[in-house]
Length: 194
Image 1: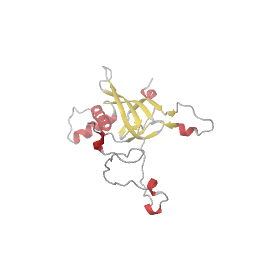
Image 2: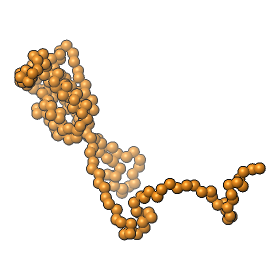
Image 3: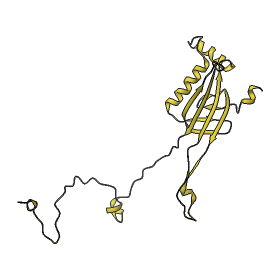
Image 4: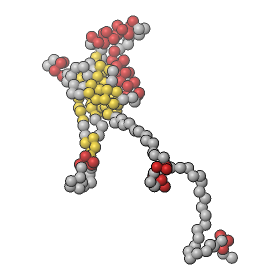
């Protein structure tokens, strides 16, 4: 079986990092539905919401590829050393992307995901993959919303300004002794037993 038979897609990226070989993609889209009873005739969309999309990508890079050779030659011309390995650079880029916590775009064989973060990175190494970087990346979408501020109409134009006007700072309020019912006030000294 040829190596190309294992590839799910070509041209996939995690942020700006080109994936050399994608072995597996697991796409997860979930709706969270309410667990409490919903009245018949109510809008079901009011009782369910879409959770952030998740994608698991098992992918790999190798030092014995043409891209790695070009990267090594380029590194030499930029002051790098002969011992610099292509896969070490890719791994450093993945860690830096995760550490930055800045949303990025993922392109897979199935679709494009925007506003993603790397939730976890797992690297598997053994005696057979010492010159390869095998990564399992679990990425999750960040839901980004925009808020707006609005200006309330002036107090004079409001029908009931006491309940609809903007909050005002009226200073500190001090507690005063209550008036006992049925009428009249009792001085605080009257409370002291003799």
